[in-house]
Every structure is written in C-alpha cells, then in structure tokens.
Image (cartoon, rainbow, N blue to C red; front, top):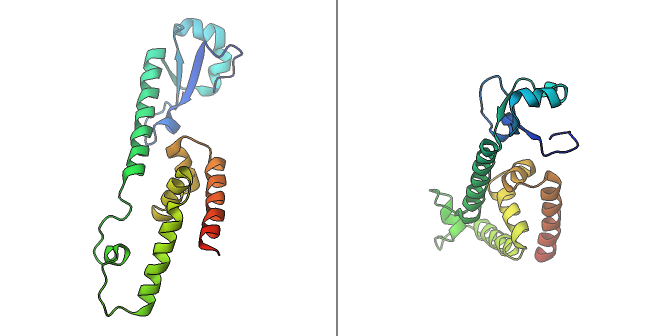
Length: 173
C-alpha cells in the first residue's frame, strides 16, 4: 500500500477492509517505528491521502496481521472439515440414501444423478474440489471464496472454470 521508494519506513493498512464492521471515523493505520513527528516531516504530504489515520508500532501491526492470519487459518479449517451433508429434516434423507421401497422413479433418478455428481467432484484436484463445494453447496461467490483463501478472484474463477470442464469430462456431458 505504501508508495514510498524504501517501503521499510512505514506501511499502511485499510482498517475497514481488514476488519469489516469496524466503526468510527478512522479508516487507515500507519505501521511504523518512526515517531509521529519524524513521520510527518518525512512523509506528511504522502500520508495526507489517508487522513484520518492512527499510527501503530510494527509490533502492533504484526499483532493485527497475526490475528488476521489466524482468522483465515480457522476459516479454511472450518471449510475443509465441515460436514457438507449435515442433517436437515426432510432433505438429508434423500441425499444420504434413506429411501423407502415405494419411492417414485424421478426421486430414484435424482438420487442417481446426485451420486454421479458427488463422485465426479471427488475426482477433482483438492483445490478445485474445495472451491466447487464452497460455490455449489455453500453458495459462496467467487469473491467470497477468494477472500477466505487469501487469493485473487481471478484465480478462483479460473479454478472453477477448469473444475467445470473436468466435471463435464467425468460426467461425459
């Protein structure tokens, strides 16, 4: 974020982006070990665009970054190990295969198609599989998946596109 040549004197983070839901008038934090007076002398005009901002030490900035890394790590862990087919009265029975003998033919065909789709998703590479599950089963957008994984939306879109080609090939569509 910082536009100075050295890039070691300070760093700027957008508090609104890093911490959604944050209230108050301050949107920016300047992370530096330089005292405020020296910072203003050296980079005052450059930092005007971020007014109002708070100045934090590098240790404080690292604590914020560590918190963010931990949140992303825990979110990824929740996504990886979440039971996609958790119990839902009236719905889960058909997904998990709890059927009676007198079920209509279209329900049986629907189950077979669902099973084929699940098998095809299982054949995908790990990243494509995870992104497809988040996209199709959880209804997350490409942008939401990208933010959760800490990658660009273009990477997610490209991965989902390749996954769709793979699924079509697996399902022979």
